[in-house]
Image (cartoon, rainbow, N blue to C red):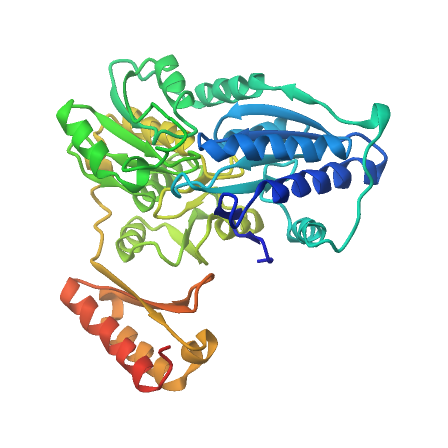
Length: 448
């Protein structure tokens, strides 16, 4: 990770960590890098979520792009996966999404994808960072070389049509609840489900610039649970602010996470001969219950670092077709290069309709193990992590748990913190083992 760009873009509080000048310079660099540097005119597509500051960043990015001679195509309020899709299929040099995903309204972020809709490579991001820090100068476009903006709402409509085309089944007579989090999916999701024939019930679809993710969406799933039960719906789907993740609620009001989705869709793909390598891709934070369920149906799995970036890299490198995170980022590489909440909903509907089973029955084999995760602030993450006594304590817990649970000790990517997590048969067992390892960390003098 660089100085500004992390695993999911340049993110921070608007006009504090991330301000309009950053956006202008990002636009300036991309316009030059894909355009003037190559003696051509660059084409860049831009989308944004519903945060008030997204409009400021949109115009700042456009100004920077045009000043470097690029044309900026504006999709307006749309989802992260739609920008990824349009960048890939409509011959753009790159795409930019303005969003801080599930964060509160006062945060924002700038995510950049390449012309294949994939997260931008590190070399290009480091070049942007050097320009932000004044380590290089770029020429301004003049006269007929100055760029323009193009209204490109047609791109959003094309994406909606693409999603509709992916469903093999009509959703007629299915009562579906959608929590669109007052975010980027607030118009798109209902359009898709209505077109497929569902009886669609929508909540949190009145964005005002400040209420994105506020007590709603995939991070506040309890509201969709009550909504599904209260309206006697067949199924419900909740998205985050930029709709790249999806959490499902079954007809009984139970939560169906990204882990459940990987199991349900992975098994369905296997049954239809479409699960390449007979493997799915997870992160180290997937629940132990998922692995037990996958073992029972003889499906293998990979484990990556936390972050959909690492999941996707593993999938591309090894040719796997489905992977994701418990948080609801699920990637289907046959259809997309990024997590897509609405696409995930369609794939879950496909399994439910084809098998003629309720979602509760499809998800039942994945029984989550109790989990306890505690964060410990330390003086040095590497020293604490690599301490022989700490490693011995972790190994002892792993041996004691055997195949009845697991322990994971990892460093935070952004804080001076070691995360100690245990999954086991009871919460009491988890607490005992987590506290035991933390006590060793404390006894060795690593705690800050």
